[in-house]
Image (cartoon, rainbow, N blue to C red):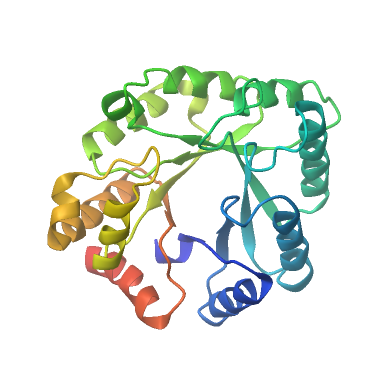
Length: 267
């Protein structure tokens, strides 16, 4: 399972990106994700793609394309920018795309709307990933996630699901069961967010919780309980053929070994 792990990189400039990519190269990490948030958006997001494509072609990259963060001037201009991006990705086979509405959805310019329009572009043949938050119904009183996913899938453009992080495996199990029971979803690749617990992460999350991310008081109150949950989640991912995406910082020998220890202890 370790060889299939994906790692999300966070950085503020090309120098930091270069250091982290070299760290990945040295540690034989091939599967990386580039988010589209914070400073990584618009021109810098595009610069990042060009830089990696030119200098680090050995990586298997998934770029997160946020319709919210990439929005420019108006819907028409923003949609054209997306089309140009997708056409370039189709020509450049060394990366894939996770299409996201963003934490603050733009009215009539979220993934559902955009996928319907892309479907009409007959000459554009792309496969995209989509996010899925299993915890919205129970913890955020949003009952429409399954319906939204079904509408996205009906575009014919979806080939992967990326599950949001949370600490309720029973809720996650229900949604995974739903997806697996619906026959038309059976060929989708499944990915799941994974956070590596630490005292520093707990303190930061308590101070500024991530929107739409449910972490129980039990995990936030005890590092040992958080460790135990993380081991259980990794086992769940393995059992259900879900590839983990590491979203916490890993770019030091100590942090990387902390990640790998969970997987070695599982075997």
